[in-house]
Amino acid sequence: MKKGDASAFLLLIFLIAVLPIFSGSPYTLTVGIFSGINALVAIGLCILMGYAGQVSLGQAGFYGIGAYVSSVLSVHAGFPLVASMIAAMVVAAFAAAVLAVPALRLKGHYLAVATLGFGEIINIVLNEWGPGGPSGFGDIPPFNLLGYTIHSTTGYFYLIWGLVVVVMFFSVNLLHSRTGRALRAVHDSEIACNAMGLDVAALKIKVFILSAVYAALAGSLYAHYVTFISPSSFSLFYSILVLMMVIVGGITNVWGAIIGAVVITVLPELLRRFEELDVLVYGLILTVSLMFFRKGLVPILIEKIQKLRGFAVVKH
Amino acid sequence: MLSIKEIGKSFGGLTALRAVSLDVKQGDIKALIGPNGAGKTTLLNIVSGIHKPDNGEVFFMGEKIVHLSPSKIARKGISRTFQHVELFGNMTVLENIMVGRYAKTKAGFFSSGFKLPSIMKEEEKILQKSGEILDYISLGHRKDELASNLPIGEQRVLEIGRALATEPRLILLDEPAAGLNIKETRDLGEIIRKIREELKITIVLVEHDMELVMRISDSITVLNFGEVIADGAPLEIQKNPEVIIAYLGEEEEIQKGYNAHP
Image (tube, rainbow over all chains, first blue to last red; front, top):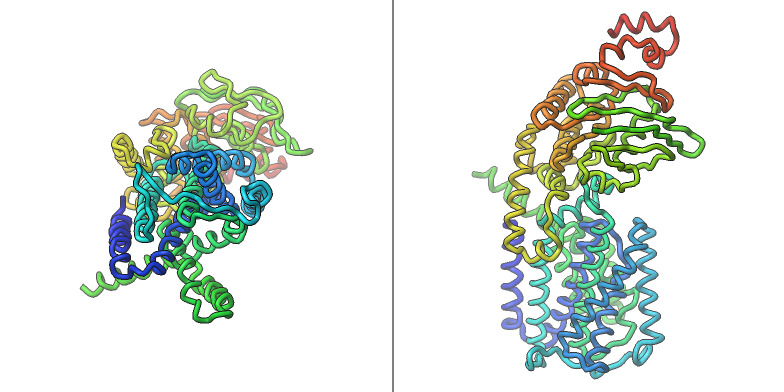
């Protein structure tokens, strides 16, 4: 692991640990929880898009599969909670594989439209055949493991951000490994990858599955935290929102996914004071930030730090 | 080691290759020359599996490879470089070489993500081997730069280094000297020769720089309009009247041109 990643992990863990102590209001923690859930989806999309160069506008589909499969299994089939969450990830992985085999022959806009179509199909299926139809269903059991059930907001905050750390640890390691290099290589030149003996199709399918599993994990956490779900939470709007997170944070850096998720989740809360104008201000901020910080927050931050260091070296 | 038999290929109505046959001996530097549009790159693309021929067969170490995918062919031991450099531009010089080690290593998604001890050892070996390769092609001092920031001469050498990282038995070089100045071309020639002599890797070279071709190749095949018009040692090829006509066109021009560039 590189030095920058190690310090980022320390900072992240520190912030997670102290936030509930300094600002323990359930409201802050709830916003934090949703940021964490969104971060999980965004990390997957960032690896898929920023590193492997594959577009997806269908992450809401996998997020929805995660939420619904886990809920249905724990409510109607009596699965233990963790088992139903794992099953949800397996189902999402399977769906991703089935989608990926034909879709990843497509590139760019075509792949975007294909994944968008997938997300919409899942949304329609949830509306038509999901329990409760468009109005969704509730009484989903809260998270429990080995007989211990989490009820408190603080508990959920630690659970979800703990999982963000684990997922991030896995992702950073992966990206700095043989596989991660191969994914980035696929982004740059598929033809050269073939000449190096890389199985490009298999790599694309695997990274697609990875992003789907992250989204499904987030979806199941969402369902068991909120204990009520309906199809509207898993619409195209959510896919676009995740895309925004990844881009605002900086698509070329996986840490950007976390920053982007927090910013996009927290921003509407901060804009509450503008009342009916909040959506307008929100849109304005996003547009302006995309115009002036096109690379995304984290890459810009890294550039600034490197510049400062450069100056420091010159001074001495 | 490489045997191309009666390869035919057309793109739409355009015939790129017509019953092309040629053999490459183990340990040779074989040059493939000919005017633009003669089908040289198409032939390389067929050997490396990017294009499938309409008919004919390619044997590598006695094995038919025409039906295989490019990545399978690469894993059989044929690596290549590209006419238009195909480096991983957003990755560092060292990382480019490390990608070349992919087929010789096996860390998967899970073991990489959880950093299992076996992976750490493998990663160390990849790093060490890649560093050695970089030193071998004299790019060690560039290792942390982005590949796209290198000058074209070094990019071409890096492509060769990346091909070496796959431990190939045969390397196909598609116009490695294109865009290089005289000194860079000479250095490149030395690297190619070194690879053949020290690493015993067979080389097939498509190249327009005749000086380079004549200096380093053991045998030359000349293609013109998708057909082999000559095959032999550099000296024979230089004197072959058909080759001269193919390159220079009219009869009268020949003497002048030939005398000017022996």
